[in-house]
Structures are given as C-alpha cells and as structure tokens.
Amino acid sequence: MARSQLQIKRMLQYFVDATVEIIEEEGIEQVSARKIGQKAGYTGSTIYNYFDELSHLIYFASMRFVSGYLQELPEYLERGQTYLEKYVWSWECFCKHSFAQPHIYHALFIANLGKKPEDILEHYFSIYSSDLIGLAEDIKPLLYDPDLTSRSLSLLQLAKKEQELDDQTIVDVNEMSVLIWEGMLTTILNKRRDMDPEEAVQKTMKYIRNTMTIIENSSSK
Image (tube, rainbow, N blue to C red; front, side):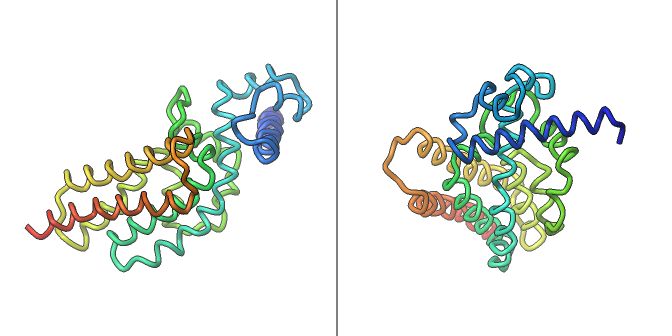
C-alpha cells in the first residue's frame, strides 16, 4: 500500500475511533462534526476531506457495534431445522440486538446516506477487512449486503430447495417482515409507546411468525 493510502487509512481510523468513543460516552444522537474533530485532534471540517457526509462516518462507527449480533447469529440459525425456521430465528436474533441498540441499527439500515449503501460498505471493508476474520462463511454474505430486504430474502429463497414455494409469495412475506421491523424500530426511536426491548422483540416476532402462515398456506395448495 502506498504511503499516501496508508495516511488516508490512518486518518479515517482516527475519525471512526473518535466517533465510536462519542457514541459510547454520549450516544449516537449526540455525534457532531465538531465533537469528532475535537476528539480526533482536528477541525470538524477536516472530516469532509475523507467522508462525503457525516452520515457515512456514523455508518462506519456503527459497524463497530454489531459484533454481538454477528457472533450470536450462527447459534440462532442452528436452532432451525428448515430454512423457513432459520429465517424466523434469524429475525429473532436481529430484533434482539437492533431493539437494544435502535439508533445504531437505524443508522445502518434506515438512515438516508446520500449514496448507495453498498458503496459505503465496500469502502468500510477496504479499511476494516479484519472484521471478516473468524466469521462463518454463511454469515459473511449478510455483511456484504446492506439492504435488509435482500439480506433476509436469501434464506427464504433457500427454502425453495426444501419445498415448492411461490416466488411472489416469498417476496411479499419478506417485505412484510421488513416493514414490521421498521415500524417497531421507529416506534422505539420516537418513544411512541412505553415498551422495553424484550417486549418489542416478542411483539415483532409474533407478527413475523404470523406472516409465515401465508407461506405455509400457499405451499399446501
């Protein structure tokens, strides 16, 4: 790697590390360019020499908070005997971690980034390729796809190997699951209901499991 590239990578890491510290100390909603610059030892405007938007830096920093989800996901997937069951268990794991850290998962899967998320994610892994070390091969594809709809759809598509399923039904059910999750996460963030993360998981999974009856009914016809 050229010296200039190493310098750029080092600067990126300075700003990401500073952002992570602010999130840990004050919360993601308190992150600002000024605070990041002060903590990293640079002016806030310097950030924009390395990141197009502040949301991209927050995205990079948020990726550092999903290790618990990635470590626990394989265990959840193993609970399922079929791909349909694995799909449901994967959602339960995702809900558990996302509702415990709603601002982090909003930054990763809902927030407007101003450009294609896959481009930002590719940039992230060009800097933090070590994040992939030790991850199971069937988990890595989930990391490379920042779109929640297509990420979760992959398991339902694999279910077609086990039984005859209608393609449109699979797409519709998966979209329902994503919308249910997005609605609950938004409810939590906006504090519209007095609900702890565990209760949020239970309610969300109740509705996601209900959507699975649509697949079961379509496959029995």
